[in-house]
Length: 481
Image (tube, rainbow, N blue to C red; front, side, top):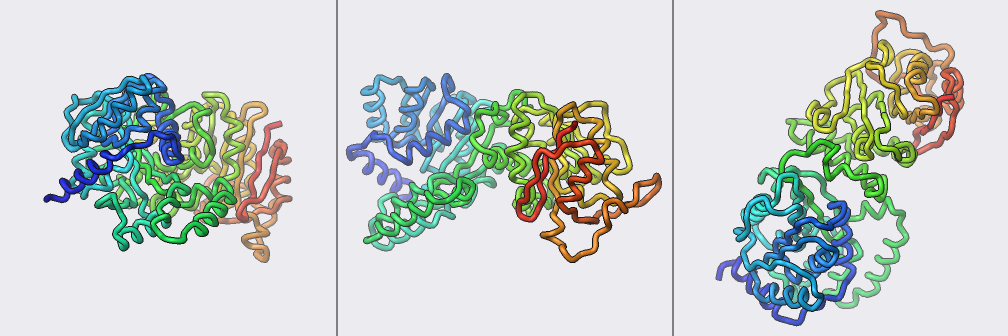
């Protein structure tokens, strides 16, 4: 018997038993992620390709999505039909192999599955993804959830069950990423994350006497700060893509209103993922190899401040020293009008600028005026001050002139006391002012003290609203007086 036939037989046997439609923790975890990615499902046409019990689709249909379930197991579809009938919820049920679905092209807004692709070899996964793309409309979403290869409780429990002969799910390949398969199929890769660490602990039940370990892992996880929880590999890898290129932010489903984003971490991750999708097309990108993992370590707490300044759609944000544009993309995802400047053009993606309406200019802020004539609500100046070759007071005055009354300047810069307490930096008041024709060195020229930031704010007619320290960096919000 062929391996795929053996796998089908396994599922037919599993679904021949009584199926519980009791709503459980894992179902809630998956449901929450669908709602987060979709921004709401009411009225949308949703296909679950490889539906199994159809438990989550049942809830989506009950909440007024137009749901279609496809599975090659008659037993699975029988269970789903019965559950939908009992709940008096409409649904469409298609008996079909998801490698060749008996469905028309470009029909669905969202095509998804959970716990499916890991049961196929790579060629089968590619075939399924192409079918999922075929039946999804342009601009529609494709989402697959598969066991995450970096989730330790799941991997340990699965290994134990296989060794003991108690594993009942057949061939199952946990995944590290589906980015490459998505791109091979022509699906625009949008983001990847993991969810459901606590759900992974159930796999430890395959190991006798694991209850104490499960208890301590549960207590440990609940004691973590929210930011750290997001760094713990969960049971399911969530891979999200889109059919066709990422659209303009004004109509993009990824550019959701502010209330869609539950945390700065989620929005930052989305911004970095979008930027990564552009840099992945380059032969070599520093952003992908180093910068993406480091940048937030400089200025992360400023995101909450920035969010508070972006409550009104259309807020004008200027990023001076924008580099790869992470904070600009973060602002765009909140509905801001984004403008970027940098002295070096190598970091920037012209395609990103075009697709998201970001206005970017190459500019040496010390030697040149700020381009264009707009006035801004927020100016970002992160990890730039220390690179100033000359006295920064004229630059801050330029910024002051282009800010709206009451506008904010957000600054991050290395703190001298942390990075170079014994180094002899030039005194701020003795730093030379730029003169036409002077040269420039691309290096960290001076580390600043807390007192010097207060001096800068006063000299440029700002009020210091906040000044904090994070990972050895000074984070400040200056308000225009």
